Image 1: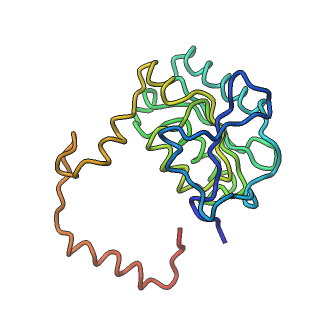
Image 2: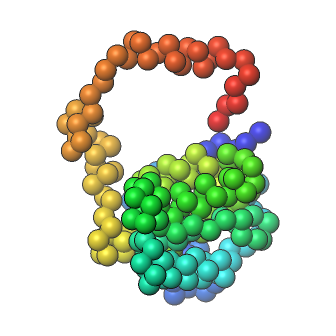
Image 3: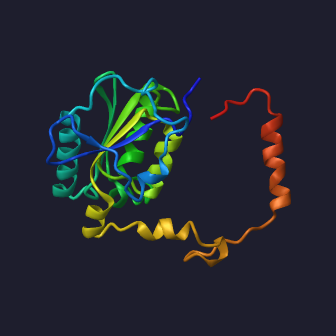
Length: 204
């Protein structure tokens, strides 16, 4: 059975700390990542200590991405059993794909590599605290742990400020910057009914 989507750790790799020092202080984003059942014992994901070498690799990828003009200043990689399963860099502008953030690219590659839609027992290393979209993708992918280097505030200072998205979640759909209007809800419920009745489905 796959672990619950809430059962992973979200940890910052401090840039000036010793290699094994981690911080889980309650930043605005990861405050929402409380772990079910109290203290999480890592039974789903601890395959070894955090490795600064993996983060250094991610940082090198992000720097190369910037210098080559291939995309934004972000990179991520997926690690399982002490080896890199997949790497991803921000490819938004080169692919004309607003969803091609580094974490999403890495998750897609990793899932293809391990032939699974969940990253059980995997660690995700990312050069920056994930944006709201990537945070959602991480929850759905269910890695064991997430390690990040720069903070959301660091990204904002470079022109990547996603704080307004969190604010938008608190606003009624039809009052958001991009208005959202509900249409044909009753008809759409037939889709979920069909899903519930489907016997050979794969829950996720």
